[in-house]
Amino acid sequence: EIGVRLVGSEMCIRDRDKIQYTGYIVDLDGVPVCVKRIDEILVSIGGGNAGEKLVRTAIAAAKLPRADQWHWRCLVSPHLVRRGELLEHNQSCKHLTVEPNRKDFTKLLSRCAVSIQQAGYNTVVESLVLGTPCVLIPFSDWGEKEQTIRAEAVAKISSILSFHVEEVTPVVLLESVEQLCGRESSGEIAMQVDGAKYTACLLYTSDAADEGLGVDLGG
Picture 1 (cartoon, rainbow, N blue to C red):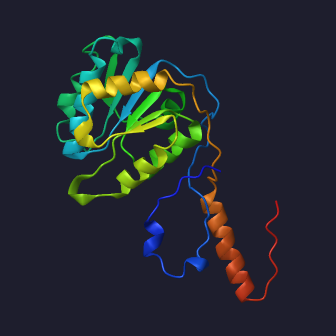
Picture 2: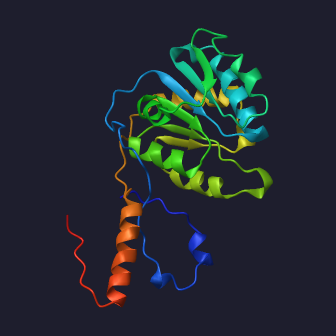
Picture 3: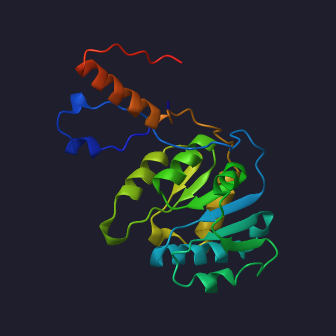
């Protein structure tokens, strides 16, 4: 199991001896874990001013010299105010696609060469399980720290780079992609991802024990 922990969060918890680790929660039903990577850079960013800035930065990176080694696919969130304007960049160069979010996102994530994204829980965990190299730019507006803590923790893995939003430029993105594509892939990472099932089992066994019932967790 990967040793990624959100260091410091336990300081806010009382009675830590009563807490059990249940693992991550991720749904990869229908997504092949072992796939052949294609020469595509997948950009998926959330909404807000920071999200729009990052999408524009990625579009600019795709138009730099050397960027045409890959196809760049930028997914535009419906929560971006100037979404229509961003979509007008679609096919502004032959190796750039700018399109709305897609329902098959996880499949795209499983096969891309590099994912450029923020550091939300779902996408980061999916990327780790799928072994997808990532450039993380955590959301940090309004003093938000959750994504920054997560990004710094997982950036200890060789296939992940993390930057603060103010550090990100088109050149930084392109150089990061080149750096990750030049590394030997770390492959899939063994993680406990059945957290929902294990949590339910713990709750069930706790209730059964309180009632003096025997519990069989086999099967």
